[in-house]
Amino acid sequence: MRELCEVTKVHPEVVENVQNHMTDLVEVANLFKALADETRLNIAYALTIEEEMCVCDIAAVIGSSTATASHHLRYLKDRGLAKSVRKGKQVYYSLSDSHVYQLVTVAHEHAKEGVEDAKDISS
Image (tube, rainbow, N blue to C red; front, side, top):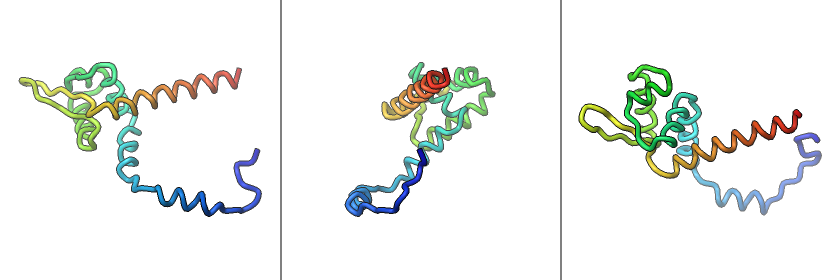
């Protein structure tokens, strides 16, 4: 099957309906850009497993220095994906809310299903 219409026929009512419901998606794109980095996504996924982790533990999980982990955590925090709290001499991070948790876990499940579907097709 070709992925292109064989004739050009615009459906004005469909186009108008979508245009009337479109919204500015810049912030959504920025959210996905933040999670598009594998290290930051690993951090976010780790925070779906452990609700709160200190910078040192996150650095150990991703195999980096605390400075690198801190940089990525600050990036996530600046974009509203993570939050932090100081407890004594340590800083602990968690995901900012349940929406971020859902985004990361749903994306992970979707990716796993895609791999399993591809294996089924190739078998």
